[in-house]
Length: 437
Length: 94
Image 1 (cartoon, rainbow over the protein chains, first blue to last red):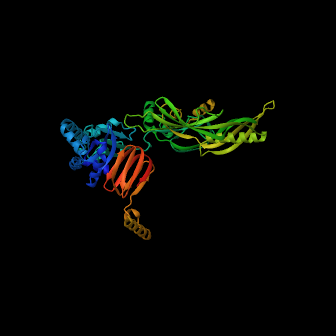
Image 2 (cartoon, rainbow over the protein chains, first blue to last red; image 1 turned 60 degrees about the vertical axis):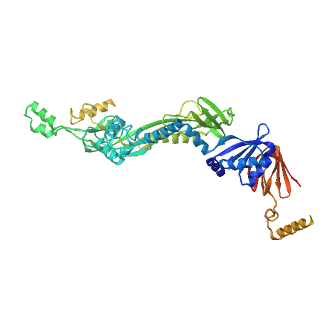
């Protein structure tokens, strides 16, 4: 390897000479310390061999002494290549131009990527960056990433962090947006019921309660209103005042707050479940087979594994591997590993009591998934539903009573959800709701 | 020549006793075969014949004949020859 590179740098020639004088020629050359290699037969009783460029003159001497003529048939190596290039100035110039153009163009920015933005548009960031001197075709030397980061941070309000990194001719602007805390107190918020239920206890921290303990509520109904009506004393103390004026005053004293409070209610859940005593179930048998195929364009080529799945019932799991996309180029080659797992069917037999227990636990699990995490179970009732005829099926109805928090914050609507303006004492309102229920 | 034989005998015994390699002491060729693809012959005295089926290399007082197919001399240096090709045989001719 090393010798080959050296020979290439030195330059070497391939010469041919008649077969009959090869031995004399080679022996004389080697005794003079001339390195020869690659001696092979050439066409027409000729032998070809390689020798270094600097050994050509001594070889001529050897040839004269041995009285054989040799012909140079090929010249290779760096010295000849340079000579060739010297004759082709345009090629050399073109290569030089290419290198210079590549170098010159790589000192500009050609791609600007913006990542991490969700609510701020890319255009906005790009516009700010353009004003700060980062645009397509901007020279890389004039780019000051730290300065740019600072400018973008100042000009775009909703950003918490900006990072600008230069990667070759690509500039990557990474942004992290500010996460603003939710509004509190500024907009009026009601507490509404999340579910239907019977109010067990209500604790108002701020706002105006519209329901009392013992009331039945439906989901979506306002429990604590954001609108606080004017104090009643005012109305009573000024019975003689002009009605218009009183109304005006009432309007002025209306106050909107962010309602807060805890509302606990009794909620009933009802779930029905049935379990068959005899059931067909499928289970993996443990035998599986893997198929490896390659997808090129629309064609699928199976590299390894069966052409047809040898199982009657099976599930398949596909794992597709492909090359990562680069810029706009997608390589349409995928390697797909498909794993087939055989499924066997069994008959599962249960006794009546087992089935009932299973149905119960399943029903309770389902109920638990419906309940919020803070719910307290007050009462559980399990009933087996019996039908007239004897069946191979167990039916179970489970009823659970819980105590849970049902208050949920919702923006206040001016005329929605039965506001307290009409009747501050809420008597009618509550009655109406109970009637609806 | 009795004198020369005696000299060689003494030399061989000497190298046997001292465990010296024969190629240095007795001026013998060292031949390395790499499978049937290459033969390296060190300590040669030049080539005697070459064609793609047969290469004869002169060593000390013998001739080594390498037979095979498509034989080429990969390189020739003053002390080493490398023959490449499909080698079928290697014979010493005295």
